[in-house]
Length: 553
Image 1 (cartoon, one colour):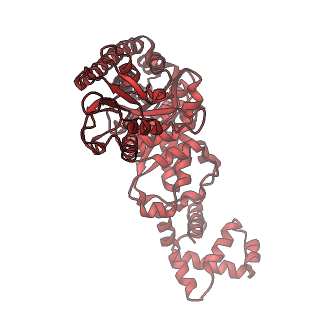
Image 2 (cartoon, rainbow, N blue to C red):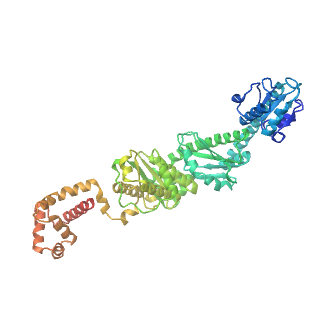
Image 3 (cartoon, helix red, strand yellow):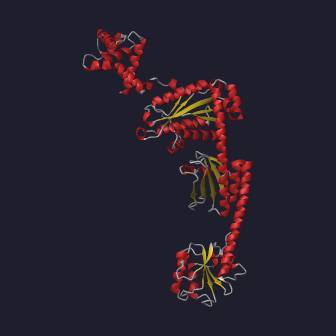
């Protein structure tokens, strides 16, 4: 504990006597300073015990002393020591009254006690307090290291909470709470997710202080610290206490940050090794060697191959090539997914990796994530947290995408294709399904498409491709040019005839013309296009061309 006025008064060698402010002697003393200036305030920092002999003061003038004491108190001076037997035999009454009125402790320093002795006493107590803090800090570091080695992050958090007499929480890269100590702090830590997300936007290392305003009973002071050595923090630590941390507590927090950062970086190295194993497992599955893949996966990914899984293939496309889909799903994204989508900066594939891995870690499920050139391949349990998080994140991105954003932005957009649930023996087929879904997502201007949606939907949205529209325009242009001259409505007649499957009477009735007129028009279509309508392939191409041009209109 730092020195206080009370400890100096009780110091047997100093013989100090309290003349005013008896109820404020428990205030810490940062330093003892000697000054005979009439106004020493510009040289004060606050927390000092000011020692004077009143060499240049009119200490017997009440008004002068009131102004003098008031300025000292306003500057944060915690006490005034007056040496008697030098310029005054006793402390002038005007100074005593002024100190009492202001509530500033006033100490009488006897003639035989030099100011240097008081300064030495303060310095010695400060040094002793710092030594105790450093010693306690080293002890805390040893305990935290022991807990980190034996109990992991959870044990470390428990030891840290005990050291600071408060609580501690660990957050993952997505801002979700991973562990807390004590357990009751989980709800408090969850309320800080938004603050953790803001901290992650700053380059590491970063820290911030939240709360501590004293506006409510549970308004504790919380320090947030980013963890990791990369540009973006890998996780974060929260430490909640009733008051600001002391020196020993600060040592403990810094030790915890170092240990957790070391654990995080070690985890990244392990993740890189696991990723290489995962890539090998994926190659074996795609090569039709599920048993070899299962052997290599071992305990790391083996459980993932024991139940149906989905293959997810994601890549980025240039914003200029993305069209906003008019048939986007009406699924409402979760608040967490919307926040993650809004927070996405940099590489969308990295953001997706972070979200999928964090979701799997929170759910305690295995997930295989493999970067593959310009793609990201994910093998995740069907119906698991990783697949759900991927879908919600993609839907949130799709909800946030607007025509203005697509036309004005320069960043790449994420596109995701997902296979149907399969087992290890059908991994190659699942990969092809995911690629097909990915291709459809690109063509439809969608962020996320599951393979099951391909069969349940219509083929007509696929005609929105620019190449298909160009083909349709080229095929039908002669008919449109013919109709523009006013020599007959060949396009409408062709559409009616095809929609009625070549039934002359029904199509003619739809058009309001005689069937012979319709027959004549269809012969003109054949002559102009140089194709026979008896060919089913020709009829199919013309029908799709009409649909493509209709959707374009």
